[in-house]
Image (tube, rainbow over all chains, first blue to last red; front, side, top):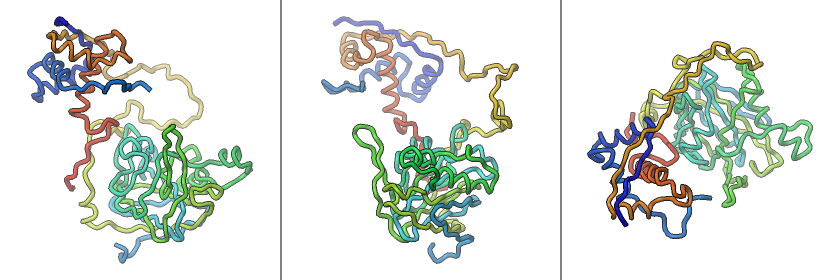
Length: 52
Length: 313
């Protein structure tokens, strides 16, 4: 599987929330914060769905 | 506290309610005289009746069964803690069911008239000039309810005893309106109506100091913050020709952030992407991952409850 560029679309409210996390030291940049979120998130157990 | 002298004492007989002024720093005690009696309750800001206890907000913060150590919250945009439940000896209350109404007893039981919490609340607060339209959903004290796995709400019988009581400390001046629930043909109060004792005490400094702090935020707006702070005096709804929308933070336009992922990160993303919801929409999947991570890391509660400090006032 090759690398890939994903595009995150944010309105200014969403961006402000994430940028505040960056300012609070969660990551050095918005891009790094997104990579951290991917790294720290847990997939759903196999067969489990959140859609009711 | 049981030895202190009440400022006020009243027995609510079945079929009745009572509107009571409870000042900030006073305790309203609502007590079982015989036991097994549901009490419906709401309260208003004594100085602005448009601020009232909101079951939806209270339910969001404290769940379906608020009890000792929780608050009764006012409706948005005020969203202030109006009263604090300092004691609750039975520990079963409900903010899921609405007040019972005359319509219920006519439609389900065939009564032309029947005691019901809406009309009792209405009649009690009429003493203060309020109308039947000013009755709101109630905090149902000593009411046992459950939610089934299928999503239905049910009422069960109760076992509150003589002397069981709830102490509400007023955090602002309120008009409190408790009533003896009028449901004598339901299991709510075990198919019978019984009197309820009301008392008002002064809270001690220690009792006030023991109340955890709730946040004071700019978003807790009062009429001085409203674009239109006038209470509408006519019933007909007609458009304001001078109206110009002032929705906040609009327009909400999205701008892109490009994220370069290496091979390992792409594999991780694929494992996380909620394809059952978003299909092949990588952008929506990525946004879900990022904000779900933020929720887990930063949000006090998934339901949006405020952070209530354990620090004493």
